[in-house]
Length: 221
Image 1 (cartoon, rainbow, N blue to C red):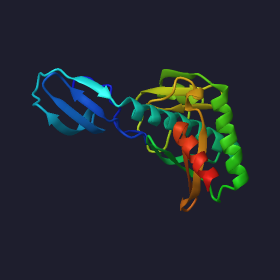
Image 2 (cartoon, one colour):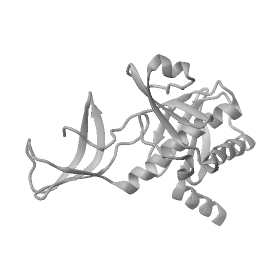
Image 3 (cartoon, rainbow, N blue to C red):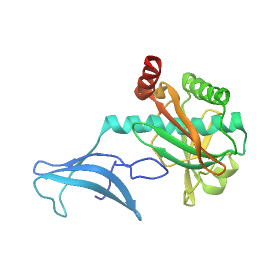
């Protein structure tokens, strides 16, 4: 396509799903990935035929995208909270942002205690309740770093970068999709913490409706 609203897998965020269609054809998109500067819409043609020159309406699956958005913004708040509770040695070492959960890998040499996990979750939820607006700016890379924005592990940045800021709590470089205000996240709930390699820990968490379900299941147990 010459343009698309579909987000291609990048920065830990999974690719969008949805439908490309016109009056004669329907293509179900099950994943979106990058190939150079191109976006690949991966899926199956369910009806009709497609040829170069056809016009299509692109519809991203709204429910799945919104759930992913909540988890991605919460990942930024989690990163900031980890650095405040555990120390500035904490750096992102990998992440997964999916509709049903988030996973965040970070540098830390010992298990995170239950008390620390509680403090981290409280900090994130306090920022959610504060309902901070997302401030997004395009800046030259050097200017963005000087402004205090954190660059994320494994990402390759262009000369001009996108800076995402939530109040005074979190400022990072990110090209992903995000909430308009932190309050949109609703609730943040940590579901697990563990070591995955020497000096690297992993936290898994859920947000929004998924967080409510997780709390409900924990209460039932």
